[in-house]
Image (cartoon, rainbow, N blue to C red):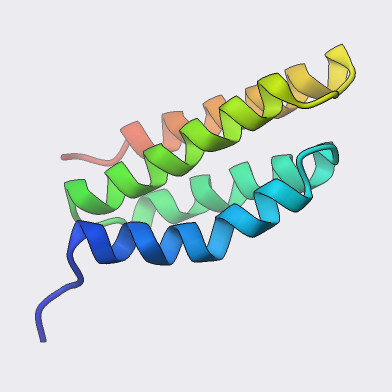
Amino acid sequence: MAPPSGKALGRAADAAFDAIRQAGREIPAVLIRMADVLGQLAPSLRSGAMRDVVERQLGKLTETAERAGLSASDRKATLIRIEQARIALRGRPQ
């Protein structure tokens, strides 16, 4: 069986994460947990397409955190966790 295409992975990630991110946009704990989960996926990603999907989700999460009505400290904490997830993602050999 062939691995799913990047497009199929993107649709699956959107279905899994978009609704949660949108509903939790004003709740720092939800945004932080999403960043943690995306970072935990990094070691298991086997292709550039998979990494691209997670990077796109991290971009959406960053945009949400920056635009949400979070306190400065909550925004900072959320953005730090998103950056930690990006570091985990980049640490995986391409």
